Structures are given as C-alpha cells and as structure tokens.
Length: 122
Image (cartoon, rainbow, N blue to C red; front, side, top):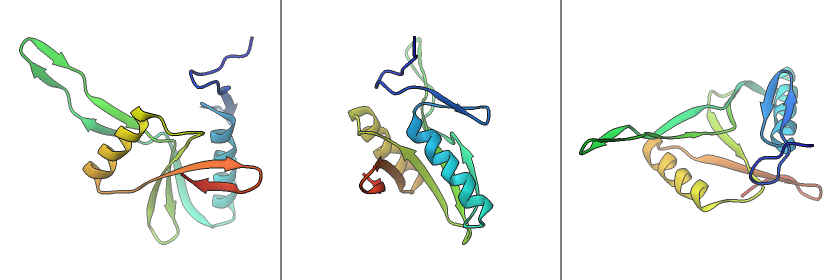
C-alpha cells in the first residue's frame, strides 16, 4: 500500500531526505542543480519559525505555534528567500503565512507547478 499524506500526496525520499510530495522532491533536485551551476549560493530544508511562544492561561500551558517552510534559499547577492511548495492554499496555511510575514517582516514565496507553465507563484 502506498502511503499518502492528508492531501493525497505520496511521500518521496531523495538523497536520504523525506519530502511530503513529488513536487517538493522535484524542487529540491532543481535547487541542487542551481547550486552546482553557481546560480544560488546555498539552500537548506525545512527552516522552522516560531509564530507564537508557549504561554500559560490559568493552570494550562498553551503550546507554541510553529511553521516549517520547505526551503531556505540563499541567493548569490545574499538575499534569503523562504519557499514553500503547495498544490493549493488551505485556510490554516493562509493564516500561518500572514503571521509569518508580519512577525518576521519577510515574504514567503509559495510555488506550484504545472506542465504548461512550469513553476509559478501562488
């Protein structure tokens, strides 16, 4: 039986890294080529951001809220780009994106792929 995540995507492993979808694995492979060609300086997987710390309400501890993007890309000019690969935008993701962009004063690049257009921003 093929394991799929809650959105119907099949998990994929490349170079010992596990990806939530074939699209994420494809983008990872493309980033490796861009780095090898000297078109980007470096990249990393799954950068994590704290959106809200733990806090106490009465006797109850409320857990922190975190967001893990798919990639952190360092461009040749030193610019840092945070990238997430999505098939579609969920309400939960849209909210986390707003909090991330506000708290960290950054733009999150969200990419999708189609055979006709290639990678495009959503």
